[in-house]
Length: 162
Image 1 (cartoon, rainbow, N blue to C red):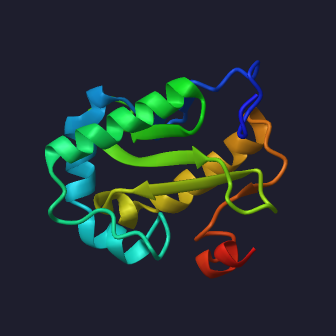
Image 2 (image 1 turned 90 degrees about the horizontal axis):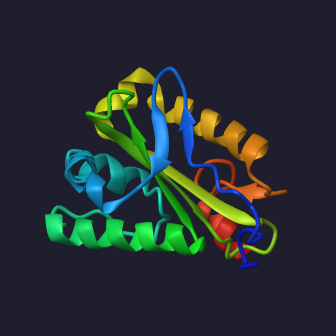
C-alpha cells in the first residue's frame, strides 16, 4: 500500500458523461493538452488551480516541457502514486481540461483533488459541471474518506495552514 490507495484497489479507468470523458492522461495527449493549456494561460494563472505559489503555466511553456510533464503524470499513474486524468470531448477532438488526484499534504484530508478547464468552455458552466461530477465520482468510486478540494471547498490559505 502506498500513501494514497491500497495495492489491491482497482483504479477507475474512465468516467464518461453525456458531455465529456475523463481518462488517464498520457504522452499521446500532448498536442491537445498543449493547445488547451496555451489557449488558457491567462485564465489558469488567474485561477491558480495548483495554488498561489504556482506560476504554471507560463507563456514560455514549450511543447517539449508539456510532453515531459505528461510523461511524468503518466508514470505516476502507472506507479499509482498520483492520478492525472485528461478531460476530453466525447469525440476525443478537444482536451477540455485535466483533473488530478494527489496524496494530501494536509493531515485532515486523505487526498488532494485539483481540476482545471480550458478558457473556451468557461462560459458554458463547464468548470462547475466538471467539479460536481468529479466530486460525486470520487465519492462513489474511490476509497477516500475525506478528500480535499483546495481552492474550491477550502481556501488555499486554510489548506496550507492545516
